[in-house]
Image (tube, rainbow, N blue to C red):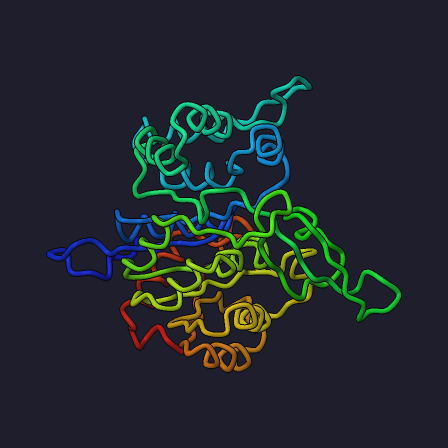
Length: 334
């Protein structure tokens, strides 16, 4: 499939696109959006507590850098310099020493934060380093913690237990019913949004939610009050991109429409303009259309799965489908 043309007239300013998420799902969304516009902003979750990110967060009290690093690598310039820096950012130390398991980009962001202080300024500096085609922002300027209400962990299948921590939630053998965010270290404070992220959402032409880990990467943005309000009130077209397959643990057994039901439960005031899904991943299209209609959205079924990487979206195909969604081309809607 050929690269999609930008949906805006070239004589006008570039399309302002904002993608919210984390991890590999956000990376593929950013890779698709850079095919449509040079004005892309990634708004990244900051509740990761595992691996290198968790270690740096616990030792330094910093934002977990892993998902921020992945977004920087995804937006890196396609030229030789940008790709070299992206490769360096993603390189992970092996062995058994103190650096084992740490990604170079995580350590670089930790060093920049120690010197510069402000996480937004640090990320802007890192964007310049990799020649980013856009901007990377945290959804909050401080690390956050996650809690989930989970069933299916006891003899009584309806008994609800509370699980704490992003990694524990993502890997639970139970069924996640609801998630919430708290300030770090158990402080009873409302999570504060990054003002730059709020402004980016309000100024956007299109805002994307998903794909990605539904409870731990996609929904958290809706749990930060100021960011939630921006998503509800923005004049941007809001597009939800569904996962290709349920995620073991977090959404095991979920149908595509159940993902939308959970989204609505966590943000009942949020309306959506379009739901984009891979046609081969939707066994009951009518049910998905009904769930999307409940959010105020039209449904676009297309072929966006990568034939070379099962379970992953193809960035070029996704870009073409997003362009169709934004242009409301009736021949692509069904």
